[in-house]
Image (tube, rainbow, N blue to C red):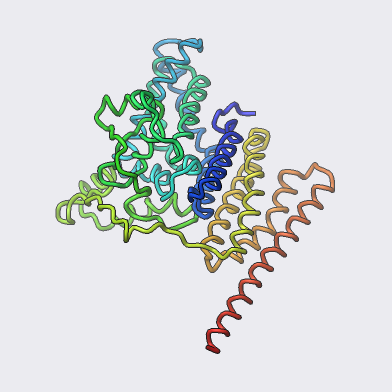
Length: 416
């Protein structure tokens, strides 16, 4: 099994989400929305399963630089690993900061900021394409002579640290706030209030923001999200939306220089003849409502049940991926992504969602049986077929129930 601290921490992540849900129940304060939380986790799933292929780029590049350009050979002693941890966090600060300050890079990172809630599930909401715009920030560590395995471990721990700071249930932490990144500091980072935009980029140590002028204390409660609402529960679309908008923006730009500046300047950059840099909108509590398109209760229950199965299948795949060949990995990743997309479309009540979900229910046991579990006994096959029958029946029942309910309501209104 791949020794990846991020994947190994998955049980801890969901345990903490469970604790936060318990706090929500006790305090009767709404921390989670099912549709938003599922989308957050779906983005994390998409990032992790595609990362099986995308991380080859970053790790291979690091190894290539280490083998050919390393100035020293730094042994992985405990104190060298501690130094590497600090340096990896320093590199993370600059990779993260530039992901906010360069429009092209922002397309990979914006996914993490799209949620209008702030809870542990937001930590899992990561962009699948971010790795393309950040991996080279870490290559100086290879030049210094830190080996690839040590780098993967320490950079992974930098990422794991940041999970716990995505919460509103922990207040300010006194003197710790001076050195470490905390929930209070990171709430600021996720705020779209003008004073909070592009502040507190640190991963572990907030000292980088204090040193380089990007620190902001938490004052009024942040309003979360991005300046232009995403308005979708589809994890694939939320990864692509910024780049689709960039393509439209490039069509409107005249001349190579304007196009170049649009790609590599801050998000919202426009030439003077198009109005110049777009202003950050002020917060209006009365009109700035969260995107909260809801499916009916029956569909939401169905999605929740299916999503638990998808989570289990995804965890199994991530722990076993290295044992599969490339074709099996591609099919498994495609099936997982298709599954989380259909969940999102069902929550949006997309007009194609029923057809796509029925199609998914058909191909899921076929894919698992023939490409992953074909050597198992017949009990597995029977289990998969039973799953398909029960899920199809449940889905159709819920849809029919909804239709009957709506029809009855319509008839009542007409009579009145």
